Amino acid sequence: MDDTVLLDIRNLSVAYRGEDGMVPAVRNVSFTLGRERLGIVGESGSGKSTIGRALLRLLPTAQITADRIQFGQHDLTRASERQMLDIRGRHMSMILQDPKFSLNPVRPVGDQVAEAFRIHHRCTRSEAKAKALKMLKAVRINDPERVYGLYPHEVSGGMGQRIMIAMMLIAGPEVIIADEPTSALDVTIRLDVLKLLDDLVTSRGSGLIMISHDLNLVRNFCDRVLIMYAGRIVEMLDARNMGAAQHPYTRGLMAAQPRIGGNRQPLAVLKRDPAWLEEKAP
Ligand SMILES: Nc1ncnc2c1ncn2[C@@H]1O[C@H](COP(=O)(O)OP(=O)(O)OP(=O)(O)O)[C@@H](O)[C@H]1O
Image (tube, rainbow, N blue to C red; front, side):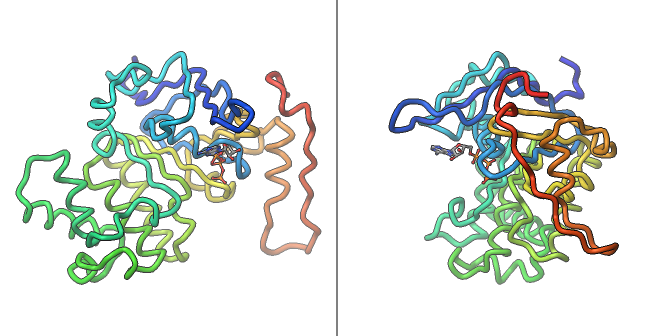
């Protein structure tokens, strides 16, 4: 495999167990990730987060099938749970939407960040603490010494989000899956976090998958964009050339973006066509 390709995914499908049998959430999705920023956009429920969770095998009850999930030397379709434990955090991390579900409520947040480093690297507790303080600073926590000892219920949502980002990045993963990483952050901090993620790609050569509802954010921040609709990738575009979008769903999404300035016009309403659910949609 070309060493600029970090992840190669072919025909990934995921179905959740429902009351009346399996319910498909992701259908035959194929893409590669290089040392780049790859955006995945689509409406709520289109399957974006499910792709990230399936790659890290964080879906114990779902049915995951794929012809290929190659991550460097690892064939993730065959990896044992032990290998996945080594991969998660150390080589591939996912920044989840809601820190409440990722932080242990009964441990100080700093210890949790330090432990995320210590699990994967041989070092003393004080070395791990120093590394964690540095990482907290990198995600724009101004007084890391104080924050280190706080419990999750003592930090705000935005700070919780940054602590979680620190925890996911501290071990130096080559692939980062960021699921709405900046949705709980205010505008200035949002820019800093985007800069930090951007740096991981440009300076360290990591690969970043950025999952978002925000088409404007993704087209400005990413190199390529996958558009998802009802569990499928309907289109894959160069972010600088979104105007070349062919699929009516993508075109509808772009037309529905609010613009500042110019004449006030009613926002376009996205009209869905049942044909988009078909495998060979336009
Ligand atoms: N644990 C689960 N059990 C059953 N169904 C699930 C589960 N998680 C997600 N789903 C369903 O799978 C589909 C895809 O969900 P997913 O969360 O991947 O979408 P998404 O595009 O990331 O949405 P959002 O932007 O709202 O996070 C949805 O229909 C959702 O209801």
